Image (cartoon, rainbow, N blue to C red; front, top):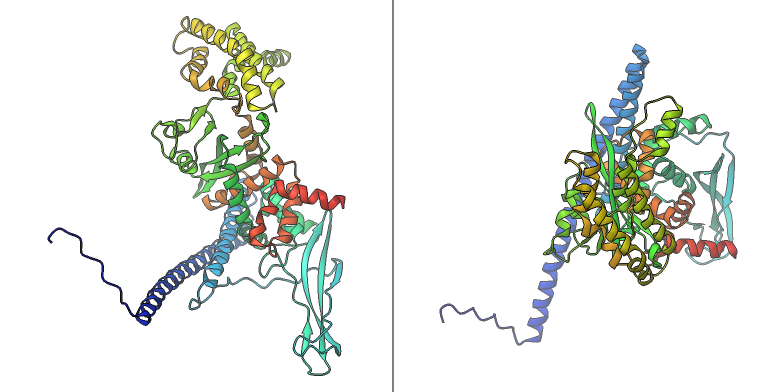
Length: 558
C-alpha cells in the first residue's frame, strides 16, 4: 500500500547462507575499522612530520640569531631578552613535536599498512667521562633461550647507559647485560634490555622528575636549567631537555584524565582564572589559565582533594561553559559574566548553582579601611588615604561571619548548616539591613557604593551558604591553586605558545593535586615515571597521588 514502509528483506533459511552473510558483514565492519585506523594513522604521521619541520625551522632560526649575535657583538639587554623569547618558543615547539611523534607511533601500531615515523635527531654526544659509572648487572640467563640447555659460557656484554641524578650529585648508571652462548647449540642468550620511561630514552626517572618539577613547579624555564646543568659539568642542550618534557607529558596524560574525572565527580567545585602572558609575533598576548578545585575537607568529606587546570587564549565565556558542559552542582566563583549561562534554569544536564565568595566581596571594603597600610605610609612620610568608617564597619561585620566559619571548619555539612542558621543567619539579616540603609545615602559613583552594590545585587548568591553546609564562605581554595602561577610569571615571563600553555596547565594539575594531598610532587613524579612503563593499565589508579601516598608510606614503614 502506498505510504506504508517497505517490508524488511527476508532472511535466508539455509544455515550456510546465514553463516556466509554474517561473515560478509563482519568483513565489511573489519574493513571499515581498518580504513578508519589507517586514516587516523596517516593524519597522525602527517601532523608529526609537520611538527618536526616546525621544530627544525625554529632551531635554525635560533642558531642564526646566536651566530648573528656573536658576529656583530649585540650585548644589549633587549637583544638578550629577544634571544630568551626565541629559546622559549623553540622549547615549546620541540616538546610539541615529540608529543606528536608519540601519538603517531601509537596510531601506526593499530594498523599494518602505514609506515611509521621517527624524528630525525642529532647524534647525541657520549656522557662526560668524569661522571661516575654505577654498574648494575642484570641477572644472567641460566638456560639457553633456544634449546633450554644449561651449558652456557660468557661471550660478551652490551651496556645501556642512563643519565640519572641524585640531589647535588650526577652519575651514569650502566645496565650491563652479559651475553652467554650455549655449548650445545651455540645460541646466544642475554637478559632483556631495561625499560626506560620514554622509548629511546636516556634519562632516568629522577632526572625527568627534576626537569618537570623545576619547569612547572618552580617555574624555571628549560634554558635556565640547561645553563645550570652545564655549570655542574653536564652539558644538556635545550632541544634535548624539551624533547624529554614533551615525551613525559604524553606518558603522564592517562593520569591527568583520571584526575579530571575525579574533580568533576564532585558535587561542589571552586572555580577561578588568572592571566598568562603568551609569546606572539613581536609582542605578548594575554591568555588565561582556568582552575577547578575539588576540596571536600571543609565539610568533613573523605574524598581526596584535586585540581584541574585548563588554558585558553582569551577569557570568553565559551571556555568555562565547555569545561563544565557535562557537570552540575554548586560552583563557587567570582561574578564573571562568562559563567552566567551555566546558571540558567533550563540548562542541560542540570542547573549549576552559584555560590558567592565573601572574601572577594570584602576586599573593596578592606581597601577603603586599611589601617595598617595607612600606618606604613605615615611612617614613610607619605600621604595617607582617608579611612572610611562605613568600610571599617562592613569589614568588622564580614569578619564576624568568618570567625564563626573557623570554628566549624571540618565539621559535617549538617552540623555546619545548623550552626550557620543559629549564629550566622541573624548577622546576615542585620548586615543586609545596614547595607541597604547606608547605600541609600551614597551617590552612584562612590567607591563604597560600588562595593555595596556588588553584594546587594547578588544577595541570594552570597547567602546560599546558610542553607547548605557544603558551601564555603570564600573561594580561597581556587585562589591558592593559582598562587603558584602568579608567583611564577615573574620568572618565566610568558608562555612560549598556546600549545605550551596547554601543556603547562596539564602539569599544573598534576603538581598542584600532589601538593593538596601533602605529597612531594618531585618524589611522586620520579616514582610514577619509574613504574608507569610496566604498570598494568587496569591498575593505573594506584599511581594517583592519594592512592600513591598510602602505598608509599606502607612501603617505607616495611
